[in-house]
Amino acid sequence: MPIYIALEPYIKRYTTKYEILYHALRDMMMEGKLAHGDRLPSSRELARMHGFSRGTVSNVLEALTAEGYVAPVVGSGTYVSFQPAHTSVLPSAKREVRLSNWGDRLANPAIWGQEAQSRIQGASNSSGTVSFQLGITGMSPFSKEAWNRCLYEEARTMTEKTSVDAHKPLGVQALREAIAKHLQRSRGIVTDAEQIAIVNGSMQAIALLTQLLTGHGDAVVAESPGYRGIQAAVLAAGAKLIEGAVDDQGLVPQPWDAKLLFVTPNRQYPTGAVLSMERRQQLLLWAAEQNAFIVEDEYDSEFRHRGKPIETFKSLDKSGELVLYTGTFSKTMMTDIRLGFVVLPAVLAQPFARAKALYEPHPSAILEQRALAAFMSSGLYERHLRRMKRSYSHKFTLLRDALKRLPVPIRWIEGDAGLHLFGWWTATHEQYEAYEKACREAGVEWARDRSIRDRIGISLGFSHLTDDDLTMGIERMSEVWNRLG
Image (cartoon, rainbow, N blue to C red; front, side, top):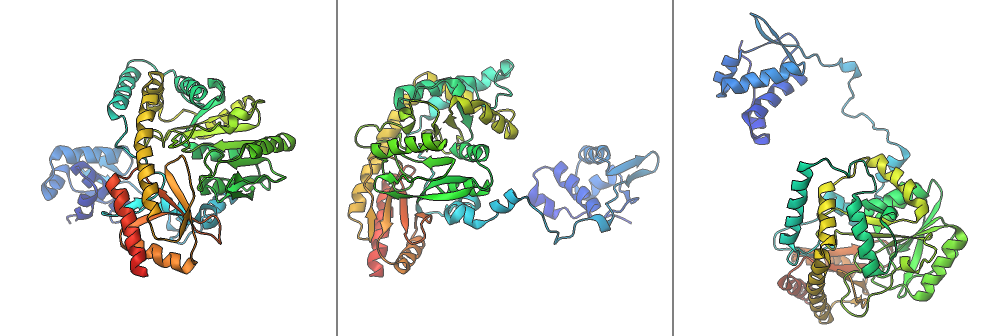
């Protein structure tokens, strides 16, 4: 009796005839539609029935034979040898998965917050929508040709000789050396390559440091409002989260009983407030007395649009043992370059290397790391930064001036740096919900801060938008407000 093989579902999923036939036959055996001992049609019959070449069918049968699904019998044919496990030991569709305490904490929506959860599920990219969302880097001023040359040269070199960067969890040595030189020139941070670790974006550094330095019940201070990724890392590690209050001068120091403090001193996230020098000194004294560490997260303050550069918190730490400094290239290069770094006190370099080796014994993105090292060492990176700063400063000024004409009850916070502008909603929550919904329907969206329950913060990211997009977005926001009356 001929065996019917339904290929239509597989034609939509796979591109080659080999894949279509292979997966169709294998699934029929897995689902019991082809039972143990059933004889398959010959390769000639299968080819004729479904319009495949006999060579393709033979290759499929050879693969299924090698994997133990079928067995050829000389002079008789090919028979199904696969036997599914007894149904009594198979998991049911309603099987309960028992996660660890850490896994359970990750599943808690309170850890992530709605804004971060939307990034996990995928942000809106509807055609015609002006999205002021954060975390998207503009590509128009990016030095594509120079970067592509560095990538090509490193790819060619890597194929000609054995890699010297394998099994080094702290990352490619040349990139760590280039970062150390760049930080000393541009940020006043004196360090060496042995105290720098390359990470897959600053969030990996935040999560690893939290796991490395805190345990169940330990207290960690994070700014509120603040970056929800930090709060998620703290709560997932089982540590106790202390929300540090923020005002117009940044984080307000308190005598916290904590082991770790995360702070964004040069441009508080999301408000943009700059931590005063007096408070920086107070926090350094607190860390020394408490035997705690301070993690300085400098996520986008390299882009200053007005005034002089602000000294980093790390450069004030003359002992070199209190402040850890994290940075990212996802803002200065492009979003898809998932490279960041952390400057560690000497005492933490080896413990951090062991922690990172647990997840990545062999560093990832070696090609990109080596290309970035060449990009920085040649002077192309600093030239690229100057171009990016000019482009972003123009957009910053355009958006700031447009917001002055926006008749919406938002108190915008004056800022001098970064890739977004922040404001507090000053009307009722009901009015905000109606306004946000109407703006989404009109094709405008933005990032809402939800880290403080009784206040609504609004962030408008601008680095990825064109001048026309920025103007159109603010015009739509104004029209919606006027229409709502």
